[in-house]
Length: 264
Length: 175
Image 1 (tube, chains in turn cyan, brown):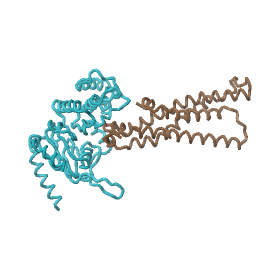
Image 2 (cartoon, each protein chain N blue to C red):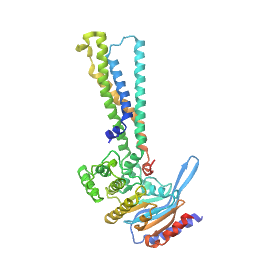
Image 3 (cartoon, each protein chain N blue to C red):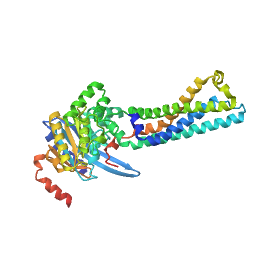
Image 4 (spheres, chains in turn red, green):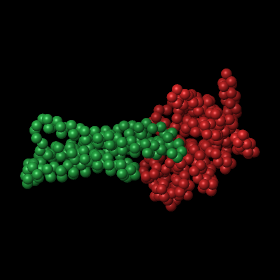
């Protein structure tokens, strides 16, 4: 079985890497199979990955590479068909729907490509929402929301609704909302894809800053090469597998090569 | 949240409100107006009430289902933020109950006006005598409860759809 052999090899490699550092996410032999009628689609075919506490990791890969699926599994949005995923040492396959909601609420912050700010609520209410779900008292939630909105540079726009905010400002609200419950992981799904170049850079800088100051692990899927530049590690996916996982300083030159590969 | 969501879909909501109101008005009218004791005629009225109730439930079902499907991404988002299924379900039910309550209030007013008018034709000034309105209170309460029950019934399925929706929906890009 060549599949098994490959997995073992990856395990050894992982073991070396993880010796000295804490892991926030640990994925072992993760497989996800979608059933579309009688057809089975193997979105992930045995993914092993360890994501260290406090690091900023970017995930790259063409569409259909399993990037989004990996994301959903790590984010506790979907259970793997096989293998296991540990988030903060919790095996998410063991959790029921209510416990998954708890995990999503306290351990994970989401940043979406299209912001997904609740339209009928103000910026402040949006940031308070996850805290209220977590059972934080109203006053406390409000204080924290004000504090964190000020942090992301929206100190004067608490009471604006998404309609009155630009894309970049909406994404800032989303970042504030993601950090509200002091999660262990921030999951960002192409956070700059809908933004212009300049605003995108600001958002990237903000995310990096929050990553450093709060010590939160950031997992970010992206096509944006500026995003890679600030990452600690970069993971490439292809055909439902991890094609490469490397530190930022190791791949400096190889980014171009990767581009060439992709073009071919 | 339920209130503002109703505001967003004002047009369709108003229409449903109207059917709920009409239904309650009709019910109250039949309860208060003097109807003949002929069993055949009573049966016909009963059938009409049932029909109007069914139409109303279908209306509520449609409105709430639309409200839920249009907010797929929003519901997915709040689930990502840690909302429990029960919270999502409750907020949909609450939205619907709000609609039902408003409909019932309007319906009761309409029904009373209708009953008074018909009473004026049949009994003349006697309509204003207290004796004409015996048992009005429980009739109003029945009509209000029916209005509320109707919307709750119609919202049960959409609420379940919303609650069971996977949070992954939020990850989808622009439609």
